Every structure is written in structure tokens, then in C-alpha cells.
Amino acid sequence: MISHVTDLSWLAIGIATLVYYLLGALWFTPLFGAAWDTAIGYTRVRGERFSAAYYVVPLVSSLLVTVAMGLLVAAAGIEEPVDALVLGLVVGIGVALAVSVNNALTPHTPHPFRLGVITGGYHVVGIVAVTLIVAR
Image 1: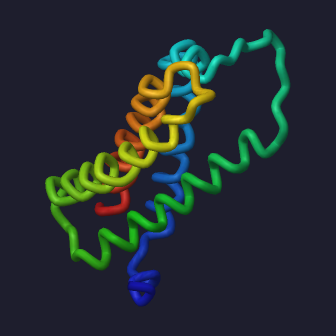
Image 2 (image 1 turned 30 degrees about the horizontal axis):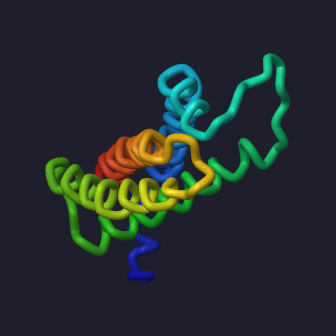
């Protein structure tokens, strides 16, 4: 699989990484931010400042997922958008959503299923988008 690194379009990787990252900014703020806050028992404070890690870690994570999906697309020889969609859904639902819901089921999470679905849903949509972009 590592031999497929040279098959990757690094421009597509960069674009897909930014799409995934910016989707997270939308997903966890205006779209589902209030529901996510409730799910984790958090109250946002106006003007609150976050550390650099709050921004850098999701960006790096988006890059890692994008490269992994690019490698899977290359290894599978995917060229058709429908095949990229199927791969994105399989990984998104079968791995990301499943892991997100499982990780949310802790005794200290006020609304674990809601947290898992919101977080997992983000990853499903993001992984599908990334897969469609890197498969072009």
C-alpha cells in the first residue's frame, strides 16, 4: 500500500484536507454546535479563547484521514465517483461512526448517543467528501 504514495495528488490531498477541516468548523459551531455542547455538558462562554491545539489537532487529523483515504482509493484502483462514494460510506459508517458512538458511551457523558451521532455524522460526511475529492 505504501507504494501508492506516489500515486497521490497532493493538490487534491490539500484541498480535501481543508474541506474536511472547514466542515468541522461549520458542523461543530453553527450547524450542530449547541446540540454538541449539550451532549458533552458544556456551556460556551462568549469570547472564550482556545489554545492552538484546538485548531491544529483537527487540521492534522483531517490531513491524516485524507492521506489514508487517498491511499485506499489508489490501492483499490477507484476511478469512478460511485465507487469513491461507496468506499467513503463504508469507512465513514463502518469505522468512523461506529468508533465515535462507541467512544461517546462513557458514564460521564450527559447524552452519549447524541454525541456519538453528531461526531460520527461529521466524520461520515467528511470522509465521503474527502474520498470523492481524492478519487478525481
